[in-house]
Image (cartoon, rainbow, N blue to C red; front, side):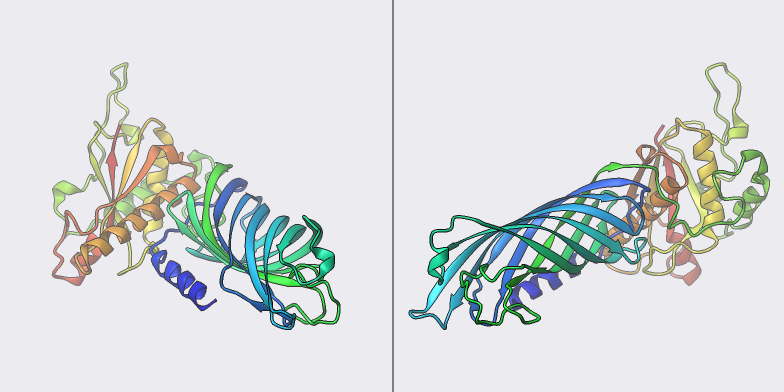
Length: 390
């Protein structure tokens, strides 16, 4: 048990470099992983040779709640010390259940949740203690499941999950001892029960409309439901220009996008389209606190302006480039910059920009545009740039 707990702690440390996944109003996931089952019984001693695997299909029908079909197989070993002679029983267990999941903080990188459900339990034994079970091939019964777990978002589509579940059965035969003169289970009584520790991966296989639940920006007519005629683009443009720091080299900031000619030869400068692929668009004002992926408040007007440009130009595809200052190792800064680029991508997709048009890439501390020797310069270098792909 201690080895499994240590393994889970190590996995948690590995996945601390994670990102806030995009939420959807309706989505489907599938998952798979490993399971460690352990019989809970005071009349026998659970052994360490316990292992299993699971698979699931999950429907997230709201930001907080989900339903899943959960299938699991496992092998448990227990030693009956009160039997004469002492007997070791191996138990093959298979379950199929329907669970309800409630997530407490779905917008965070670390998402704890509760599990409640039930289903069917099938099991068989080798060398059971009770003679009445020696000729039984498989026994099928019901069970109830309660538990808790946590999910770490890793990238846009993947997540890592770890769960601790307690399975209660209305039978005393699970451990191979059908006698009723025993106490068993975590809470007493003579019904058998067992615990499982599950670790695995989740993957989005189908997504609906992006959810705006986690969008913290509500000012400057940010709702995409508001007609574009009611949006004060000049005011937003002024905010962008007022936030251009004097310390940034003039050539790297696109203050006014260059008009691009349409097929008819007419300019489309009013649409703020860039002239060719490869142009850089520095989102001045989209910065981050030190060692953080949280956007600063002044970033949202700039990002909203970027959303409007992208929505009015559906053919534009963009590489979102994340950068850091030069403090920290190269490997750490690359991961942090990737998370920052992903944060911006999540915001843009939540505002209606198709995720297929966006690529999030982290470049660490490469290509600074300001002096890393000063606090102001380092703050400017913790930035986001757009590179027009086409």
